[in-house]
Amino acid sequence: MGKELKILTEQIMRERGINKDAVIELLETALISAIRKKYGNKSIIKLKIDPQTFDINIFEIKKVVEEVSDPFSEISFEEAKEKFENKGIGDTVEIPLSIQDFGRIAVQTAKHVLFQKIRDIERSVIYEEFKDKVGTVVSGTVLRKEKANFYILVGKAEVILPEKEILPQDNLKRGDIIKAYIYEVKQTSKEPIIKVSRTHSQFVIGLFTLEVPEIQDGIVKIKNIARDPGERTKIAVYSKDSSVDPVGACVGMKGTRVQSVVRELKGERIDIIPYSEDPSIFIAKALTPATVLKVGINESEKTAIVVVENEQLSLAIGKKGQNVRLASKLTGWNIDVLSESEYSQIRIKEANKNFKEGLQQEDNA
Image (tube, rainbow, N blue to C red; front, side, top):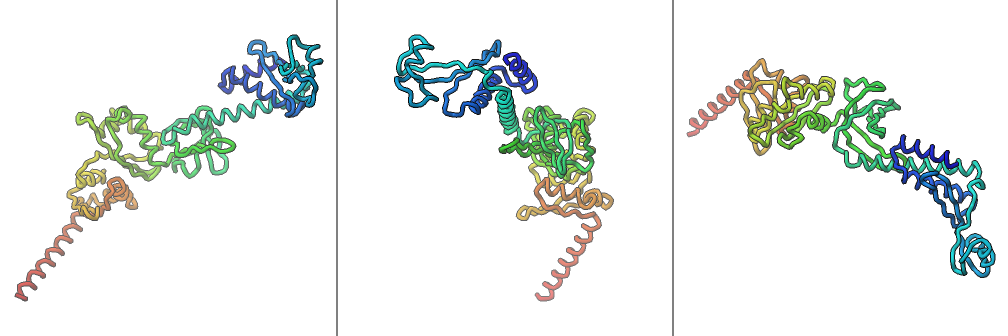
């Protein structure tokens, strides 16, 4: 059986990445569990596997007594004297047992217990590996789809990508290599549950962090993000070093960095906005690609009126109001966009109103 155990141990070490001492310890625990199936829990069993030959040595531990009252844990002095030298009353003896006595069923039981314990270890290792990775982006291979979930192989772990967390343009197939954002890691009585997303706003931040060394080094910071997954994202960036252009760092030479992110997001449009402490400047930049003529703000209500050229109005508002909605979310201001014509009409109405009020005051005087 030693040769069989050696082959089994080498297989486990190779396939599961568990070291030899740990495997032998697991084997010993598994075999003892199998032995107890035969001897029950009344006997005290000791088992040791030779790490070189994998020979199994099994002993039943008994205490030497003058008169036996419990045959499972005691041996008489007379019987001990015949089998062992220099053993007196109160000493313990190790009585050898033969592995052959356990038969095939016991060996199969040992294997079952062994693989169960290995699975438990693997689950624990996976949980420990991923519990601190919440909030990071990982790369994996699509394995399959079951019901409303895709299963992605990341390292040795199968992580779950819910169908609701994929991009509209995603057409995932077995073998595809994708990136995703870990948003949940939970330990359960069975397998650890690891969930990832491609629609989460932090996914975009994670992708830029991977692509932009200045972000990794903490020089360039992403201040805020607003996203319609699969369609458009706006990120606000600033630099802690005045010599480093935060927008240029994120765009990269000839757009290589931002294009890498766009490819992973299946063509999602990305606007990179320079953050400013001046809300008027920040709001104007946030409405990119539209060109803003003027911005009026109400600090107490966090509202802003933005004026653009007539032909820029649809661009500033965006399809179904997307551009101005994302700009509002990015800046934290409620933005109302007006064309020059609309703004002029309002000014004329206000001027007329003020003129009438002035005439009325003169009449009353």
